[in-house]
Length: 499
Image 1 (cartoon, rainbow, N blue to C red):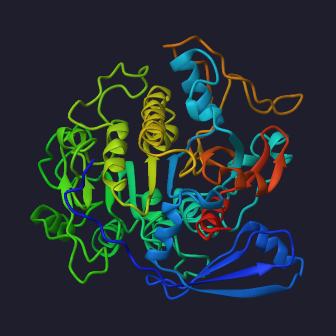
Image 2: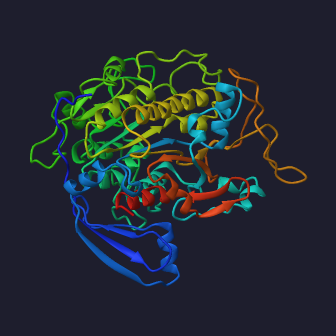
Image 3: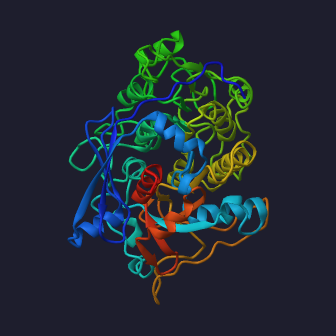
């Protein structure tokens, strides 16, 4: 796989580590070239501070792309991942996976990632919330309260900092926080975010942008396209197409502003991504054939893919949304999330320093809000195929000593249980889904049209994955040990710091 243009490493600023005398990971201060000051505090460090321990500041000096490259080319020094890939099934809970397993295989487990060596639960609450693993299994309605939205959860996963619902890349005081994309760029890595919903939506935005409201889509698109140093962006939001892949009578610039779209079409969108003083413009792709062709062979320096659909690849297509999976034919003019994932990997793996990639199955959440079981299964299967594509890439073009893969969710949507669950005369009951065999929808019950505060599954494999097992926040009565969503960023920050 040869790149059409050689990539240049980015530059990073000085790095300072704050170490404690207790048994905890270092507290990482990063003075970068994108934010004035960013402070990343792990859950363990916060608990250590609360215990009043004394900290020692160690200044390691200037971090730079060249030094990062030396470490990366040695392979996985002390578990330090060269590549990090996070796959987020938006709105996915334990029973979303189980329902899909039953439909696909007639048994559990079915997915390769369910056999990853690190298998934990994860809490997702926003800054004003909490999770009680005992109450969650005695009060059926408990998890319907103190829920996060995708913006706060994405910020937590990307920056290691809890924030308020609706905020993108800002803490509770409204200050910008350094995210994994920005830190990867400081280390000279290529970066990308892709999704099956608009690219300016909450989850991809939370890994890149900084905005007071997730609903400021056009501002977020402007920041992602013209101000970030991303190498790959993919997602819907095409102003000229509807959700059936048909041309709209009137363009709708809700997710991508008119000015940004004009520049993309003209080939003039994009700022200086590599620090050489020259603008690095995006190559825009739109058709399924274009996405498919990019899965192998030469690639552009920066790729921005906008499939010809307004809101989702498939979930919002017309037809009976309550029908069984695939009863309503898929729109064949649109790429799958799997195809987009393969194209993104082919672009990003040209960087010798490695890369960071976030892949979101965004419409799993939308099917959950609508309680559409058939479309939920469709979206989950496309997400699962994307995970398989990532695993295939690791085993063909990298290895598990160099690459960390995480599969998780930002929150649960729809509160799926088995039939006849809920409050009863003898207490709350969470019944199991009923397996009806491969190719058939299991019997299942939706208990909400919104998000819940339930724990979500977390799977990890590869360089540094074992550190998540050392970062537990608690133990749930049913799900067992769990981490918090902020631990994703904090562990990766720590790994990239060589700790």
